[in-house]
Image 1 (tube, helix red, strand yellow):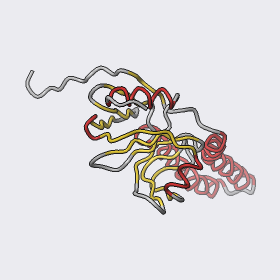
Image 2 (cartoon, one colour):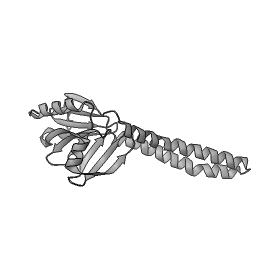
Image 3 (cartoon, rainbow, N blue to C red):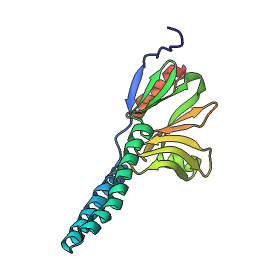
Length: 194
């Protein structure tokens, strides 16, 4: 068929690493927001209804209920479009796969790959400021650093990162499961050795 592209089979697939304690606690806190809002809304409704104001009870529940719904929609959007589920390596490059989309970095655009500890990252790039989602399932979006370039980042941990240096676009900071094997596999595909 004309216009169809074939997807190259992956050599290796690496899920996003499990969240560290910090990101897990932040995620649980964020996930508690809709339930807390609903709980307060319920208490307000019961209080107003028992005070003989059933119309006010319903009206008092609309705003918290709407806020709760919007927060849940935001959480689903972050999960589907911002938090990658896996990273796939093939001879053609690196694919970042989300539940709702996929992004491909061609092998020719990858200049290098390395593992950085949190201390290594701080020494090299300074502090970072996130633009995107953070605290819910990890951190995703753009990371502006004080001593380096702005980079794309998709992390679920803050102890160790994989930095993928790119030729023509923003560098990429990620946390795949088994970072050593990820780096070794990508270097092998690039034709380089550690």
